[in-house]
Each structure stands twice: as C-alpha cells, then as structure tokens.
Amino acid sequence: MSSTTVPRDLPPTITWERDRIVLVDQTRLPELHRVEVTTVDGLVDAIRRLVVRGAPALGVAGAYGVALAARSAANGGGDLAGDAERIASARPTAVNLRRGVERALAAPDPLAAAHAVRDEDVAACRAIGARGAALLGELCGERPLRLHTHCNAGALACVEWGTALGVVRSLHASGRVELVVADETRPLLQGSRITTVELQALGVPHRVVVDGAAASVIARGLVDAVVVGADRIAANGDVANKIGTYPLALAAARAGIPFVVAAPETTVDAATPDGAAIEIEERDAAEVVAGADAWNPAFDVTPADLVTAIVTDTRTWRP
Ligand code: MRU
Image (tube, rainbow, N blue to C red; front, side, top):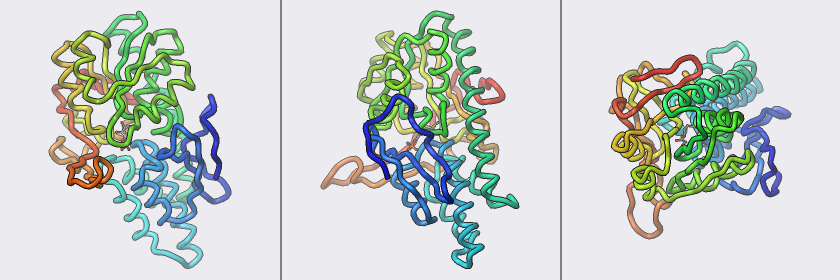
C-alpha cells in the first residue's frame, strides 16, 4: 500500500478503514509498508507470517477479522463460526488472539466489539506503563535505569504505547532511562528490526545485542532490570513469551536483578493452570536455517518463581 522509511511518528499498528483492516507490515520493518486486509484468508495469512504480531495486536486483529467475516456472512458468503475458528487458531500461543475473536463473535455488533478491544488495549498499555514505571522506581530507585528487553513488546505489538516498551516510555517521559539493551531476537529479529525503530522514534538511547550475549550482559552488571512482555500468563504465574525470554530470567535471578513482565489482564489465562499446559508454537525450520533440519519453537515458558513481578493494567502481581 505504501512504502517509505519510518517516520518519527509511527502510524497505529492496526486501523479499520473503509471496511478493511490496515496493518503496518511488521515483516518489512524497519521500512514502513502498510497493507490492507479485506478477507479472512488474507488475515489468517498475515497472522501466520507475522505481518501482524504481538499478543495484544493479535487480539485486536482477531476481533476485526470477525467483523470482516460477519460482513461476508451477511452478504451470503462464508461461514462465520468456521472463519472465526480459522482466525483464532492461526497462532496458538498468544491467548489474546482467541480472546479477541471470541469476544467479537459473541457480540451483537462484531465491529463495535473490535473497536472496543482496540480502545481497551490503548488504555491498558497506558496503565501498564505508569504502574511498571512506579514499580521499577521501587525496585531499583529513582535514578535513570539501564533496562534489558527481548523481542518487541512495544506500540507495534499492541495498538499504541506498548507493554514492556510502554514501561520504558513512561520512565523515559520522566528522564529515567539511561539505556535500553534490546536483544536481537532470533530468528525473525523483532528486537533489532522493530524495537529499535520504536526506540529511535522515541529518542531513547539503545543498544542491540545478539541473543547469545544477553546472559553475559546481565552477569557483567550492565543492566539494572529486565522488562519483557508476555503471550500467555498461566494461572500460577508461569509466563510464555518469545523464545529466549527464559534464559534472561535465569540470568536475572543469578545476578539478583528484577525480572518484570508487563502485560494486559487479557494475557492472563485463568483456564491454563501452568506453563506446561501452554501450547508452544512450532515454526518452519526455514526461518532458522536453509537446507538443514531445525527445531524452531517460537516461545518459551519462564516459571513463576523466576518472575519478580507481573505488571498488568489493574495490578502488580508477585506470583
Ligand atoms: O512472535 P511474536 O513476534 O508475535 O512474539 C511476540 C512476543 O513474544 C511479545 O513479547 C509478546 O507478544 C508481548 S507483545 C506486547
């Protein structure tokens, strides 16, 4: 749809325009391309390819997908329940996706429900940012902090503001960020391609490290705390997030620094008792290596006992 270098003010990750879903294409960042999605097939493909990604953004996309499906069913095409299930199961780990789909499907007006999921996400991210900034002040002191993050849990993983990067933004607004260390995040580079775009736009000092360097960066005392997002939080506080999160939690525990998870309440899944019950998405080996077999789990589970606190829009939970 459009192609430019990324401006300082990023457009919203997802919008609904002229009966279409418009997405910032996250596979092409740091170049900015926006794509229009007009069909359920198109949305399922966009979700699988990570054109739209990040748990909260997937929830919003799922809800808008049901709005598309409902319009098509009203015009005599498609099977609404079947289409909704195809969207909900396009990726299995982030609970927000199925939640967004189910909410829109149960609503008398799926489009109005999708707008509500979007608006609630924006409000939740603001609340998480403020609560997380206050918590880090308590845990680390009011000085400017060096924060380590993984993957992209920013505006581009939500609608705007972000969860883990929402905490960074809130701290930055009061001059309390010295540095963000962003893991590259193999294999699809959400850290070096997407988080850096956001931090650059915000003017937050940052440095990328390869994933294999993260534990030693923490061990060398180069960061004060780790802040990450989540795809699903089990009832006992186990946290599924992008593959490579668990090693950060181990390193943080060993170094005695806080490991904070920032996520909306919609990512907490009371129906999942613990991390062992979370389905971990397996992706194509070709994302990792060409011409050889590979094992490519997209997420890992950090056990609750390694989590200092989970900051949501309504509470600070120490599991
Ligand atoms: O595979 P992705 O890019 O969808 O994984 C995203 C993450 O792991 C994020 O950390 C998580 O969804 C939280 S986003 C606010």
